[in-house]
Length: 90
Image: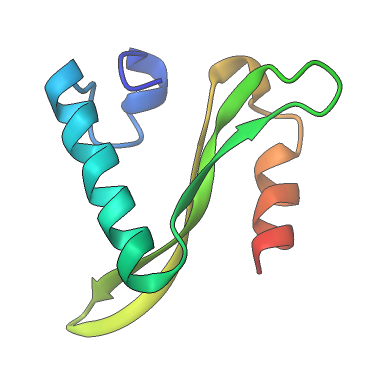
């Protein structure tokens, strides 16, 4: 996912293997501290990798917030999955 240019255009740009490792380490540390973070998303019927999503802490306008974050592979865009995921998380 981190090397897919189409996906990562919306998520800060493509990441190298080292950047992906650092991203994963950051997510694990966040999970340890807060008890939640990003999950891997798979299609129920086929278990194909759909993308990732979850909750994470972020600072907006100087205020600590919890945001819903997600990213899907292009073949799963425009199918209502992001909406379904965000509703389930909220």
